[in-house]
Length: 120
Image 1 (tube, rainbow, N blue to C red):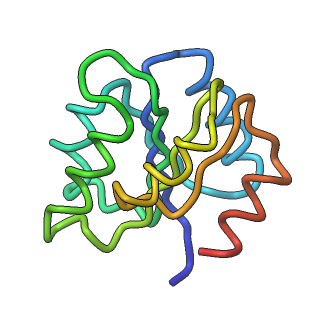
Image 2 (cartoon, one colour):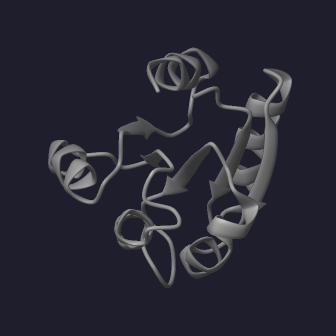
């Protein structure tokens, strides 16, 4: 499956802007949301090829959001990548249990993001 449309979910406007710039400069179409709740509500209608979610957010965390997407038949096949500025080893294994395909350390570097997308 080719990845063209990416949904970014982060409660930080700065991080959303940074990631949008990285992705758009690589030719991806980007949709950005600021909460896990909005992501769970809108992902099926947005129909992204990939969802990138911040782990630490107010309201639903990235883990909770990834879990909700993986449990919903309408979004279960959309790959999820989690990201955080404070990644720990336990985060990586927990992310997999929640249905995420990868975790990235913030600030996200273009090369690392490109490598993860190519694997998907």
